[in-house]
Image (cartoon, rainbow, N blue to C red):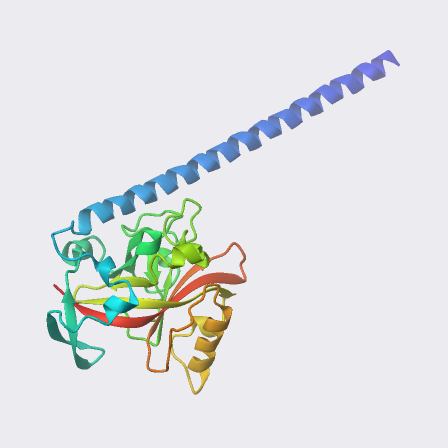
Length: 286
């Protein structure tokens, strides 16, 4: 009997040691993965901070674009310097503002650059690229380094001049609030009221968008169409207003408007969080 007890004791000691070894391996592996994620987060953050420092022109005494981020200011552009430009195949006369982005140097870093997005209410400021598909930049940074943060990128099916009826821009919902990690903060009225606009800068033109919806949507459907047939655009707009988690009453969107949809994940594979803005004003770059 004593021999059997000793055998069971040794067996128990072996199993306990095995479980402890497994637990240690799992702990070390988890620690390694966390460290790897931290390193990637850090590398991505540093890269984009360097881009902001290197290619966004410092204040040169020109007016702050945030001064144009209210409905009243938008109605008072008649006294500004204007220029005639060609946009979407037609000549238009538009106000002139200082372009803060150094696109000449930016495009030397990445030839896929199509613009720069700025959302002042959320302190979001990133270059926008467009790949041949919607997978390439999911986990590659602006400098094309592999990284879980990826890049802010234009839907591959959209025109790169933002002239489609619905232009879609994607960004990851990062836990450290980088990329589009803060996009869902627009659910909060206090944040939304800071600024109801976002900007897209290109080399020659600057586009200002008035937000009219912020909501959770299905990952497929009208929200992700780039053009519409018959009454589909009306359905698209009506659904955007109905689903919006912020009050955008008073904003009118018609079939003649162009929309940009900013999209990020929610943690649920079936849904996405989107912020939608209609083109409110075009400016020429100075």
